[in-house]
Length: 223
Image (cartoon, rainbow, N blue to C red; front, side, top):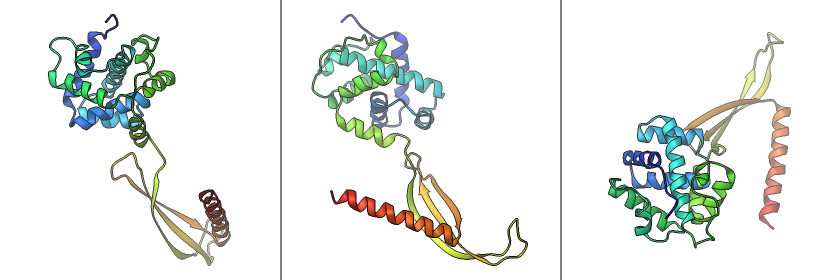
């Protein structure tokens, strides 16, 4: 087996000994296979392992190099993968990594022509090649962990009377105050509240737009 990994890669992989769970190790593999780790995910991983974010980036590169090596040599057994690791590497960790890779490996593909050292980068082509070699379930998990738009959790409203403004010292204009509560699906318990003030005209415009969206969604759902 000509191609191998450097000692630095194996040193980086041993950071996973600080992982809080086996699922965390799998999550690391998911992200390096299918997506470039986002700043939010990198920060969370650094906190979980109690290491600087720079070391998370190094760990991600080393995991990607390991995955690339498995694909490059088309390894299909735990014994083959375990033999990639040097003597003295933590036995339980290398067995866990071997199990994760085998449990989530797709059908063998043609052996890649790029050497593993080149595939340890974070380019879109590398992520695409590695992603093709592992189960679609990993792609679903990875997408779920990416930064995405906040989800609307609740809406509340009330009618108020605006009694003054920058232009007029005294006035009496009805307005609708709408409270939106959203949840960031990436963070844990990350709830935000925003309040907007709508005049009658702007409320009519918003309701008209929402009606058009409702009709469009109904049309798409009916196809």
